[in-house]
Structure formats: structure tokens, C-alpha cells
Image 1 (cartoon, rainbow, N blue to C red):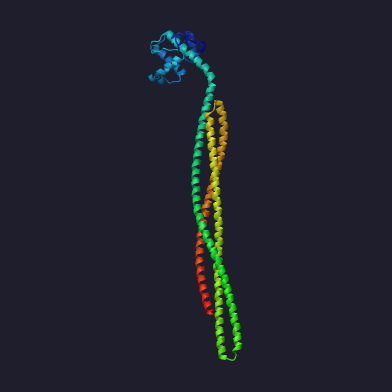
Image 2 (image 1 turned 90 degrees about the horizontal axis):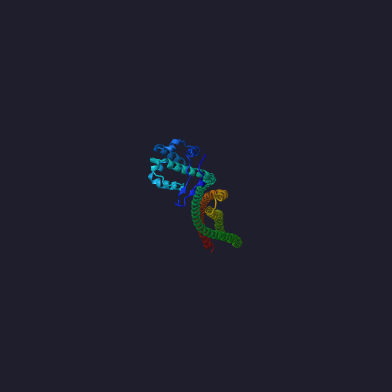
Length: 413
């Protein structure tokens, strides 16, 4: 193939932006078109060109060397750009006359210019093709990394929403815990009051036992006095009988009083024992509630750790953005981005798995905490009701005991 090499073009110093391109011979043009562009032409088409054949030849050449479609070339709005491209490849002044009334020398000059540009483009493409492929690969990698970044950002936003939801749940639990703590403090005050009242009841029971012992001692004293009176008043039978009858009645009254006192003590024991068990149950419930409070504190610490992990992930994202904006070449970007992708993917997978496990544990602990809080509330209500009932029963029983003791005291006086 005989063609003019692209470096043979010389600039025309007399006319800026104009280039002188050697015109090829007719046979060289035919051979170059056939071998280089695979277009078959005849010698007669170049020596005696016709408008129809010349138009077909131009269209075939344009479809091969210009990245435009024919309908775009025919668009009049694209003529300015096409004219600029024609001037850039080395010839200017092509007009409609070259198509409608082609001249052999003009056709040879135009075809020589096109063949020179084709040769230049082929040789240049061999040099820039590897770089072009690398740029395309880098562009594909950029698109893939951008999609992955969008996916990671969506996952990160979802985790942030879940974190906000969990924070609100923990805040609600803390508020409920504060309410329960207030109720617990009130229950503790009530328990302290009941414990004090129980100690008073025990003290009163000891006092009643002492009084019963005094009554027994007084009864024995009366019996001894009756014996003395029996010996002293043996001469007066009637008076002695009356005295004996009176002493017998007194003795019977004392036995009845002692029996009532013993029944009263048994009733007090019956009331005090369930009350003591209820207080023990309340103390166990308070200890369980303290454990729940410690669980809530642990959940709060877990939430703080997760927030710290979130900050670390944001910092890693900022580093990735800074790194992407500062890369200098395609090779550096490809190698560095691959390393960053591996590190970031591993870190994100670990953080995502840790977050999922923490959220699952948090949900389980929240469910357990709700169940235990409800159970504690029911147990507290039961204990409170039982304490109220026991308190009322103890007060009523003590009133009865004090009334009977006052009555017996007046009799002995």
C-alpha cells in the first residue's frame, strides 16, 4: 500500500492553520482505499467522477472514519462541527460543489487528505489503545465502587435509624425504670413502716406474755390465800363455803382469761408469720428490681459502645472520600482502591455482624426486662394488698387484746 505518512504533512507558513498534503497518484489512492479502508473503487471513478458515485464514496469513507451516523452528518446543525473536524485533519474548503460537480484533482486531493488522516489515526490508536482500555477499566471500577458506596451508605443510614429507635426505646425504658424506682422507694418506706409495726407487735406480744405470767402468779397467790383462809375460817362453815365458792369462781375466771390470752397469742403468731413472709418476698422483689436496673445500665453502656463504632465508621468513610479525591493516576487508584475496598469491606462486615448481634441481644434483654418488670409489678401489688390486709387484721386484733386486758385489769383492781 502506497500512502503518504502522516508526518509528511508540512505546515503552510503563508496561511495559518492550513496544511500542505502531497496528492497521491490515482493507483495509490485505489490501492490504499482497498487495502486500508476496504473500499473498492475503479480508476474511472477517480478520473471521470460522477456526483452519484462520488457521494457514495464520501458516505462510505465517513461511515468508516467518522464516529457519526449518516443522519447526523446530514443534519445541518452538525455542519459547523463537521467543518471544524475537516479543518483539523488537514483540509478546508470542502463544499457542496465537490459533491455535485466533482473535479478529478479536487477528489484526489480530498481522498489523499482522508487517507493521510486514516493512517495517522491507525498509528496513533496503537499507542493510545492500551491507555484507553485502562481508562475504561478504571471507569468501570469507579462505577462499581460508587454502587458499593451507595449500598454501604444505605446500610449505614438504616443502622443509624435502628440506632435512633433503640435509643428511644432505651430512653423510654429508663423513664419507666425511674417511675418504678420511685414506686420502689415508696414500697421500701411502707416496708420499713410495716417492719417497725411488726417489731411493735412482737414487743406487745412479749408484754402480753409477761402480763399472762403475772395473772398466773396472781392466781397462784389467790389459791395460797384461799388455803390460808380455809385454815383460818374453819370454824365458820357457811362463811368458808361462800369464800370457797368465790375463790372457785375467781379461779375459773382466771382459767378462762388465761385461755383467751393464749388464743390471742396464737392469733398474733398467725398474723405475724405471714406478714414476715410477705416482707421477705418484698425484699426479694426489691433485689430482683435492682438486678433489672443493672441490666438497663448495661444496655446503656452497650448503646454507647455502638455509638463509638458508628463514629469510627463515619471516620473511615471520610478517609475514603479524601483518598478518592487525592489519587494521581489510574494505576495508583486501582491498587489503592482495591486495598481500601478489602479493608473497608472487612471492617464493615465485622461492624455489621457485631451490630446485628448487639441489636438481637438488646431485643432479648428488653423483652426479658419487660416480662420481669411486669412480674415485679404484679408481685408488688400482691404484697401491698396482703400487707394492707395483715395490717388491718393486726390493728383490730390488738384493739381487742388491749380492751380485754384493760377489762381484766379493772377486775383485779
